[in-house]
Image (cartoon, rainbow, N blue to C red; front, side):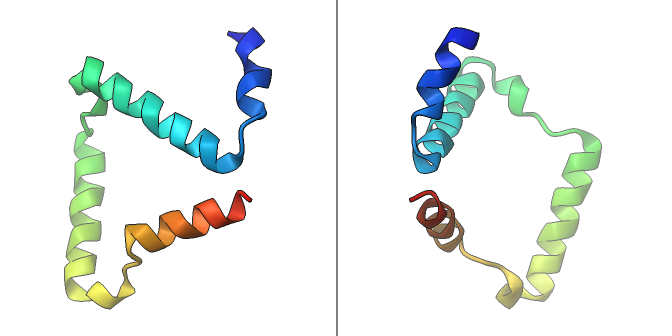
Length: 74
């Protein structure tokens, strides 16, 4: 595993983010239970959803967040 580290470090940050997403997607596809939330995580998600419902304008669209992340990697 340590031998492949230099290979992924040669990728741009955007490419490494995409690689991490691809790896996560493959884990979930292979073992769906790996993505199960704990009760505490589920409560936090519900808390955040309620906060968003109360003030939808406070949210930032995923496309905007992703674009900002990818713009920093260049």
